[in-house]
Length: 130
Ligand code: ZN
Image 1 (cartoon, protein in one colour):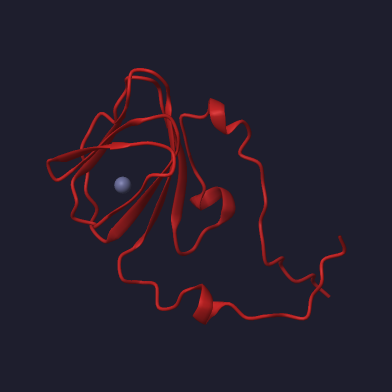
Image 2: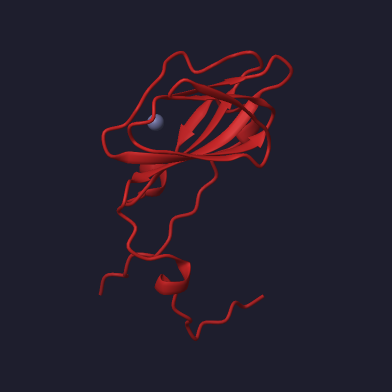
């Protein structure tokens, strides 16, 4: 009898402080989102402005400071900043001159999520061995 596939995939992407950009879609087999771990060196900006056809994006700043551009607006970002951008939003960002800017970008299809934690989570009988 064939063993059932596991309900998870866990891996290390290595030293996230040494990464430029790593996408987790294919590495983890994501089916509903793209998640990337990104680093812009000090003083460096994304060299283009882009929008999306269907996907909204959430940027979460983890480390460093920088500036975020959306549709002509420019504002400062720092650790803890979270920015949601509509698909049509024309966006870019840049690290300040002092330190690298590290951030997560989570990309999902706009208006695709039908339920959230409270409505989608179900309690199970399992108990961890720890
Ligand atoms: Zn994007």
